[in-house]
Length: 165
Image 1 (cartoon, rainbow, N blue to C red):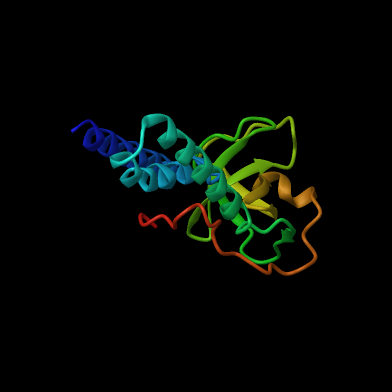
Image 2: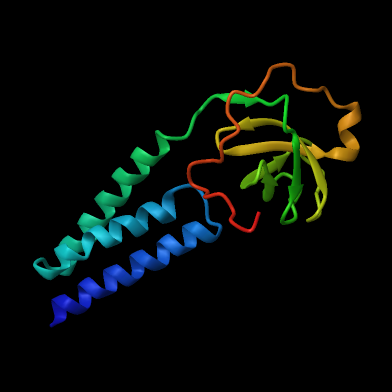
């Protein structure tokens, strides 16, 4: 009976972690921990708790390692579809969330000491991994425009397109 409770607990924790990944904690870590927890559930039926934690930790590390290989490491410069809108405020020097090309992305302002309020129209300068580099559209006129066409405008692999449109 205790083993069944442990397995159920691993399943619940895994589902909760996957939900957190889907609603806005990007970076593959939380989702990988959730998948690892679900994979640990059947093992909980036949192994002691200490071994379950070891399996979960190793599975989480391997899944994060695998998932990180899916994110391109090079910077891609955009020429077309350079408009985005801040969904959440982007604090100075930190990341925020934007809607770009029908999907939700993490974004950071190219001007380190500038905060961007939610709802502001933005100009996308480039993409670094799964983070867009943006500036407010009102400041884009004096900024260098990208010179090369985009090679990838698909959403980051850890963010599903937003169904609300």
